[in-house]
Length: 285
Image (cartoon, rainbow, N blue to C red; front, side, top):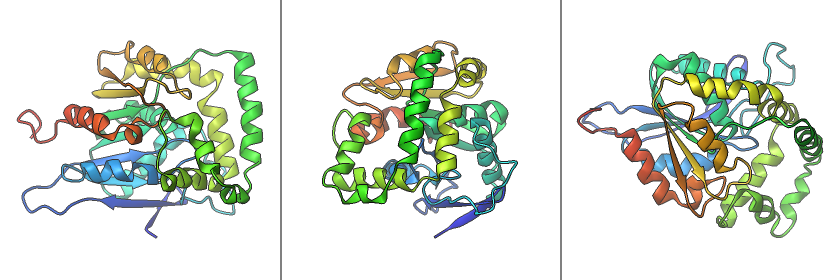
């Protein structure tokens, strides 16, 4: 299993690319969301691998990027910290300038990365991201319920028939193949407790509701924000609200999809993404 040390933590990473003799291809980095892993980006990366060398990695504490037994005190679970993880990963791999494909919580950390390191990004695609208003009662209830969900994750869930489909139902408008849904459930059950709880508390917080509008407003990197019409996790109006703050942000909504439009309607998603990235066109060649 390929791993690379990033700020003291062994991170899983992989390349999906097709060799070419004609030219060096640009690199696109995929960033997954809360409770997941790079696995759900694999089909998208394969579809883009003729145009890009695709770098996938598991965020610290998720998927195959396990936290060390001895905690590293200076590593926190703020979105800014995960942005610094990405910067260190690119430094270690000696990647100077890349494209970004990020989803959900990963998109939040990507926004911080875009503003801290704009010179390192050509273009960015944020999927299922946005800004929300703080409500003390609803946030408190979400955190209380979320703590219980993160704490109670027995492995025997995988032995329950249809458990993966039930787990994914809230995230989808149309079902995915059983093998794909099972992978999502496996990733959720394997996520490190501290990482899962810490990122949940920081990405949905009073601080996040205050700072994310400022971060979206400051973006200088051309950005495409993709939303799913029936997304219950990050409703599309939150994405529209974010896009309205900055002329650098284009908004695109995909009907009949929810929190994973890249998997629910991959053809529509890829057509719009490839149009936005425009690699190989006269203006970007």
